[in-house]
Image 1 (cartoon, helix red, strand yellow):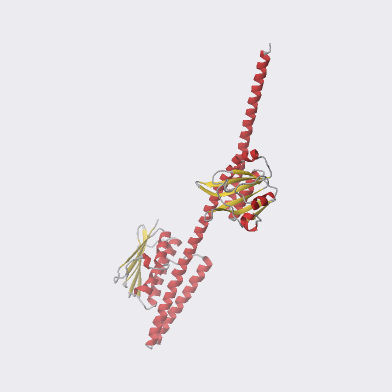
Image 2 (cartoon, helix red, strand yellow):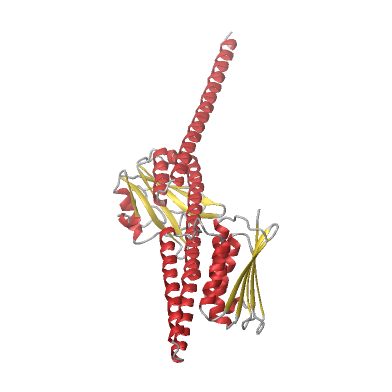
Amino acid sequence: MLQPDISRQEQLWRLQQENKSLFAEIDQWRLAAELARDQSAMLIKSLDILTSDSPLDTFLGHVLKTTVDQLEAVGGTLWFPDQASGTARLHLEYVQGHMVNARNSSHPAVLFPPPIGGVPLSTFPDRRAETYLLCYEVAGMPDENRAYIMSLGVKSLLTVPMVLGQETVGWICIRSTRVDHNTMKSQIRVAEALAGQATLAMQMARLSETARQSAVLEERNRIARDIHDTLAQGFTGVVVNLEASSRALKKDDQALAAVHIEHARELAQHGLAEARQSVQALRPHPPDDASIQTELRALAALLQETGAVQATFECTGEARTISPEIWTEMIRIAQESTTNVLKHAQAEQVQITLAYEKDSLSLSVSDDGLGFELKPDAHDGFGLIGMQERAKRIGARLQIQGRPGQGTRILLSVPLD
């Protein structure tokens, strides 16, 4: 008679167990959904910071604070590896509601960086997160570090490595007032997920910083080329004219000397105007009423006025409008080419030719001077290297043709749409 009652009790117990399992699964899904939402919010906020002009440490501080808040902890630290010494270097500390950098931190590790390796060597594991209860002696943690952390009311520590591929790029250490080892372990999965998001976002920040540095370096090189191609060309003309005036004075030809001195003065004024334009605009651009033919013809006239060479300019084909970028780079390459003629070639004739063709625009600067055997490593400064860089910027092909005793020819071909 009791059998049916036992059977019903067993069914009821099984139903209760199934309900518990179901509720537990629902809780797991709810936690997973909350985690996904929190991670998404964290990543979106990180991307907002990355796309702003905020310093990199502002972003890193946001990552650290968000991770601490998500785990309901009381503070934390962000560390980067020092590969040379094999130690962990403190970068940021979130303590008592404030974010401080290592320079302003009271952490003993600032002066005595701890080693890397995880238990039992240190509290900075290579691959997996580790938890530490500070009420016990912690292997690998110096006593002064443990005493400092405990003075803040911290009772347990969770260290999560930030792994990118096969490389550990940093650590996030979370400080908690909890003493339940199991509770700390249960948070590892959440902490690792947040650290993964932080690692990805931090890598994006580093790439962004690298891109900015590359842009600065490129702009610095461009300004150096412009200074070289404008001022150096002008000063070379000034020197050539002053030398010519000196020779004229030695021959008692004061009229010719005065002509060369006037040319030197005009070149110096032109160079001053170029320098002012570079300072004001940081990028030369053609005046509204200028054309590349006008500028090249004026360049040939300046060469002629030096008295050092006979210079001519020729333009062939039907002229077309070209972009300011092409205009600028072609003029600078022509200036550098003629500067080299005055400085090195000892030429008597210089021919500048501009040719409009069906699909391209060609510039040629040729002379009948000494020529040279082209050896790139034998030429210093920005001269030939600068011309090659300028040609590359506008997608042009640059050829330098020359032999000893047979003059030199610079040929630039720019494809046109």
